[in-house]
Length: 224
Image (cartoon, rainbow, N blue to C red; front, side):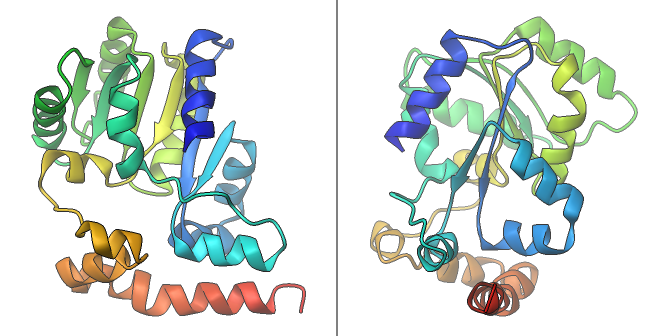
């Protein structure tokens, strides 16, 4: 996490010609990338890809390149809010980004959130991009879910006036309070996925109950 925050700090303080592109990957992301070559290529082109979740930890260890620490957006966000960067929150259902902003401002006095917009703007995308550019955030957090957010960031990097774009999945749902996080003991025990499955069993059944064993099978049969 410390290295991730340091990288973000570097991108803010030493901007490139176009924004840096960063994202998180978990077992679900890699299951998608296994079949979607274009998405896999986007991940390989990103400036930073952070390992999120016990599945990636197991996989990295299996291929002899262990990760130092789980780096997920929900744990990163409060730390990022203390860094002094300006943020723009993009995504989620109408009202979610605004609620996330309100919660974060209460928790982090002095935080600069320079704009918000929900993720449903088909038909006036250029207006949304113009609003982001007028706000000139250091960091644009894009919460459309994978792989939609990564494709959107990639397709619009040359148009966006910010220092970093980060794909954050359902982060704004957690930050807004719409979806509660697992208790700390479950997160430390690496069982947050069990808590999430209990919250949304229908939506997440395929991702976790089918997807997690499939991911592990793919890892252990890779180059076997």
